[in-house]
Length: 238
Image (cartoon, rainbow, N blue to C red; front, side):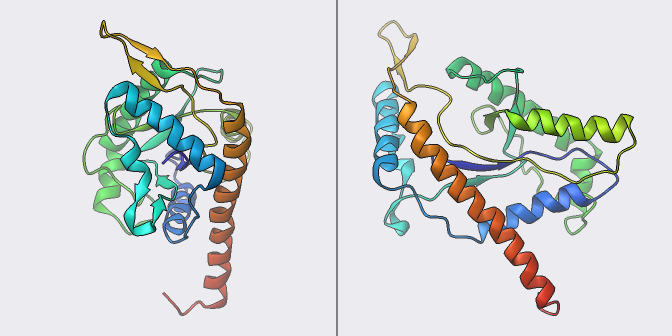
């Protein structure tokens, strides 16, 4: 699906809170029904992936529909074993950069879970000291999702530097992203075997996609707080 909810992997610390916070969000995101795209936004999605299918020969359109849901599939949730942000200190856009970002993300995820933290997470699935998610197999640039880093690069750096150099109290945090638009145009293969980008107007995508991303991501965050309140009021229930 076009829109994704992502949680960036928190840094390893002695405090279990960052992992606990990320895993809490992932859990509630799977338990909330989010409406799929409709109207003009859905039409533009079909148009985009139709151009991709025509240009590559791959049936991308079939992935947009879920028969059990009667139409367009709801947004997919990607967690820190599948995706991460990648930054070049500028907003990157375009197919070559997307491929490069996916490669960096796949390497980073595989490397993180190959060390002690990843092994401990797999051996201690109920512990809040380690991530609840772990890799069943290594990810690749064709299976990982790379998201263009934006404001999160700044505020996460400030928190990290304040804690490391100014002895500020640690504030558990995760970065949650709701994708609002594409970072590349549809592609097509030329007769000589090289690739080109197909013309694509993105202005309307920004308008429709941004609104949809805000609505859907906010719904999941608010649901997390509602679940917390429910657990506080019903402490004996599982």
